[in-house]
Image 1 (cartoon, rainbow, N blue to C red):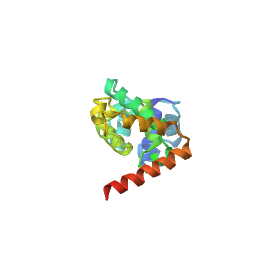
Image 2 (image 1 turned 90 degrees about the horizontal axis):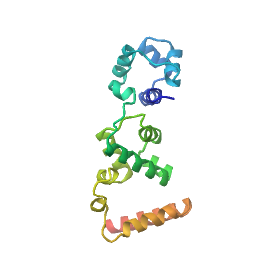
Image 3 (image 1 turned 135 degrees about the horizontal axis):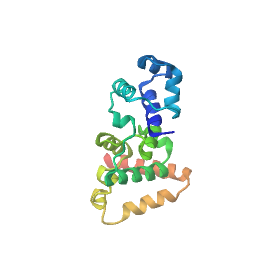
Image 4 (image 1 turned 45 degrees about the vertical axis):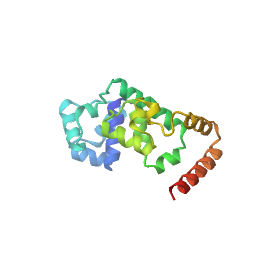
Length: 178
C-alpha cells in the first residue's frame, strides 16, 4: 500500500465513514474508493482536493508528504522504540491509537507539533526527550542514573512481572501524593 492509501483508510475510519458513505460524498463509485484504498489507483488532483475538503486536511497530508527533518526522524524512532517496549493494553488505556501511531512511525501520516505533543503526553514522556533534546534535563531524577536503571530493569522483565512492577510503582506513587 502507498502512503496515500494508508492515509485515506485512516481518515475514512477516523471519520466513521464506510467506503460507500465516502463514495457518496465524493460522488464516485464505492469500487473507486476501494481501488484508492488498496493502492490500485491514484486520484486526480481534483479528487485529492475533494478528499482534502471532506476530511479537512491539506493535500500534502493526504499524499503522505513527509517532513524529512532530523527532529521528526528522532521522534519517530523514539516512538517506535516506546511502542515496541510497552504493553499494548496499557498504551490503549492511555488513549494511544496504535493504528495511527503505526502510520506516524512509517511516515504515512506527517507528524505535526500538536500530534507530537499529544503523543508525548499520552506516553508520559516529555517532548524534549521524544525529540532527543536535553534528555538528561528532561528525565526526572536525572544525574543519579537511577531512572535509566529502573527503566532497563523493567524492560528486561517478563510481561507478567512488568505488570506487577508497574502496579507496585503506581502504588508507591499514589502513596507519595498523599
